[in-house]
Length: 194
Image (tube, rainbow, N blue to C red; front, side, top):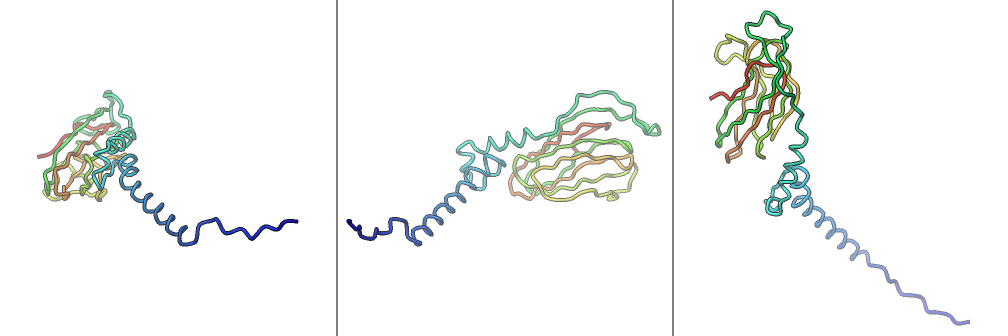
């Protein structure tokens, strides 16, 4: 009977396994920043995703998640004491903000009117505040509903009183920003303020 010598180890050493793991983790991190973030979320910290056309894919995915809006239909509101009735309608309003500029888009609403909204920037974070003023309120008198910093927000809003309700944005990004608001529901007007 022939005996064979002990076979040498053919597997990688621990040092080789550690090196391969580090290389794989580094490659995954680079792919995440360069390809996944632009293609999935429209975020492109390096600018390479835009050069490869991946940012456009992410932007189109974000646009596809916008809420659907219904065409305008006349409706009588529950609040008969209001001077002007609100209409069921949809509207889109855009504004451009220079660096460090602040502006508003407001809806004139009766108490109980409801809107579904979606606003977004062209990619930069902006500071925002959703707030409202009663009709005839003194300068600086308002009710704040929500504050934050974001590239966009969506939701439903019910007016707690007759007045103007909407958003104030401040651009701290250092570059021009475009903000677009889509709203549907019952309101009288939706417009940008100077």
